[in-house]
Amino acid sequence: MADVILVNSKFTATTFANTFKKLHARGIHPVVLYPAVNVYQFDKPHSCKLNFLSINRFERKKNIDLALSAFAKLRNLEEDVIKNRDTADVTLTIAGKPPPISDLTDIFY
Image (cartoon, rainbow, N blue to C red):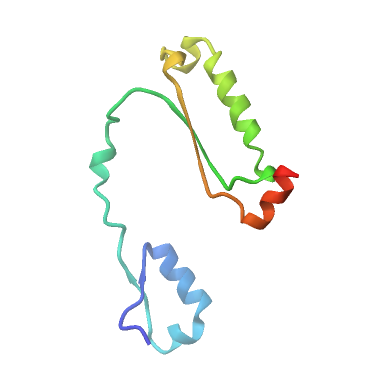
């Protein structure tokens, strides 16, 4: 058995208690440990460049083509639509996990 059970918020602690009622009845309560992140590092962006980000699994059903189409439309917007930023400087990042090798046959055949 664990020495201590940690959760990241009071909400999660309540959810834990409601889910694991027998533990709660035995007096086992989780301890709230808020994420140890320096939130002040996020006050101001280091750069004013826009980055269009798409994170997903690389599967046909995720429709990555839609992200590409949206990015193309974003690049064609007038500057005043996106707060006077130069749309030529917008970058695209697509990140994710590839499908299992067994699923690749659907893509290539």
